[in-house]
Image 1 (cartoon, one colour):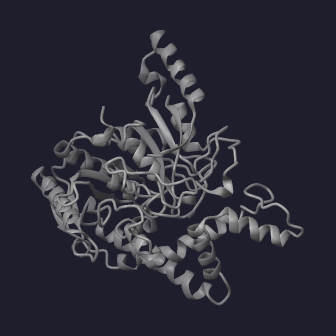
Image 2: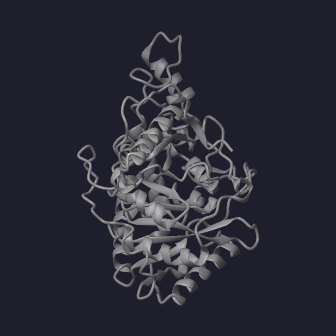
Image 3: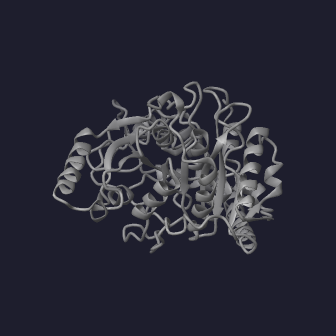
Length: 452
C-alpha cells in the first residue's frame, strides 16, 4: 500500500516503554497527556528530529531533520507514540499522491485506486488501521479530499489554529495542519493537543477551545447551510450528491434547520487559487538551491549550470510546472494583471463566507465531486485540479472545514465524505455536526481488506 516512507521503531518503542512504566507506577493516563499511548504518524513535510523529511521529492531525499515541527512536538509531549513519516504528493502538489518521487500510495478500499492527495499516505494509514491518528496538511483540500476518498474523519482547522513552524511550506497563506482519525472524538482530541499559539509562528493564534466539549449536544437547534449551486455543479456525480443530501436529511431529522446560503464568488476560487498557490510555491521553493541543502547535480563548473541542472532533476514534473507558473505570474507586467486581482477575489470570497454565516452555523457540501479514481485515470493536470473544486474556497477564506464519512456510494461502493465548514475560530461547530452524523453512520471502519 506504501503509506509509510520511513518508520521510527526505536522512537516508538522508547515512547511506549515510557508510557508503560508510568502506568505500572500508578500514574493516570490523563496526567501523562491527552494522547498517551496513541500511535501517530506524520506527513513527510513535517520535521521530526533525526528522520528524513523528504516531501516525497528527490530534492530532499537525503535531508535529515535537525529539529522537530511544533505540531509534531505537541503530539509527543501529549504522550503519542511516533510511528514514522507518511507518503504524499511531492511538496504537496497533487490530489492523488501519484506525484511522489518514491511511488504512489494505494487506497486501502481498492488498491487499484488513489487515496487522494496530497496527504494520501496520512489518509491511507488510518483507513488501513496502521495508525490511530495521523497528521496531514491542507493547502487547497489536501486533508479533506483524501479523507473523503478513504472514509476517514479528516480535519482542516481554521488558519492559525495550528502552528506551521517546522512544516515545509507550499503556500504560506493557505497551508494548515490537521488530523485524520476514525472517530470525531479522536480527531477533536488530537486538535486539542496540537492547537494554540506558538511564538515560532507569527500566524498562529492563542486558541483555548476544547473541541470535544460539545460533541454530545446533538444537532438540535443548529442551522446547516446548503449552497444550491454546489449541489448542481458540473462534475458532481450522482452517488456523491445523493449521500450529501442524505446526510443533510439526517441532520434535519436530528433537529437541525436546513437553510439555503449563497457563495457567489466561490466560482472564481479555482482561478484565484492557481494564481496565489503557485506564486507562494515559487517563493517558498526558491530556497532549494543545491548549495545549502537539497539535491546537487555533480560535475558543473559554473553556479548557474549547477542550479539549473539540480533543480531540473531534483523536482518532479508537477513541482516544476508550479514553479514555472509562479515565476511567470510574479514577473514584471504580469504581476499586476493576475496576482492583485486574485487577492481581490480572495477578499470577495471571505466576505461571502462572512455573510453566509450570519444565516447558519455550519455549511455543508461535498468534500469531493466523486469517489476515488483509478491510477492513471486522470492524466490532464487541469482535470486533476478539479478534484478540489469544493475545498479550495475554504483555504482562500481561512475558515475551518472537515470531511466526515457518510457511507459508501451506491454506484462504486467506495467511501463518500460530506464536507462541513465552520466560521473562523468556531471549529467546534463542525465537530458538533460531525458528531451528530457519527451517531447515524458510526465510526469510520477499517477498510475491509485490512480489517483483522
